Image 1 (cartoon, rainbow, N blue to C red):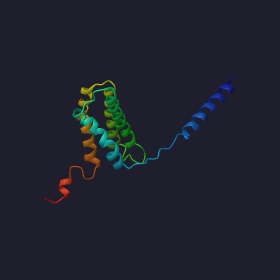
Image 2: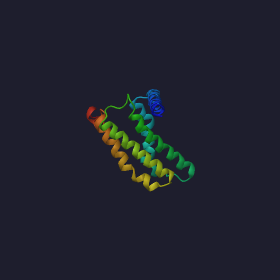
Image 3: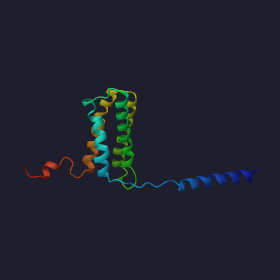
Image 4: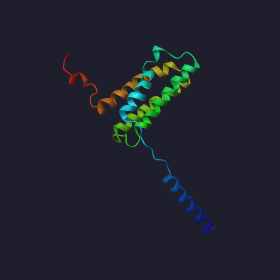
Length: 148
């Protein structure tokens, strides 16, 4: 009986090892800059400027919900190997993007405009904090160019 138990345990451990070895590898397609310009900026703008054209029907709420979901998942994309600049502040800032995007997703799902608007300060802070640390010319653009 002990032999059967030991054999079963060994087979389970071997199968777990094989499962871990077969996990897919992820291959980033876009650069960080492309993610920002093509995905994160437009989707965050939909959250930032939601009051310009607030959703008025289920279709518009679903569009906003989808944008919030894309924003949340973008934080995960920023943490993928090959994009994660470091494991400290970069990851912390990307996780804030995931959290804010998730909260916006849930608020849009509940049709809670006030909750989405309330997320603007946290989203802006997350973007600004990360850009000040990692974007080489953020807030210095005017200093780099001569007066016109």
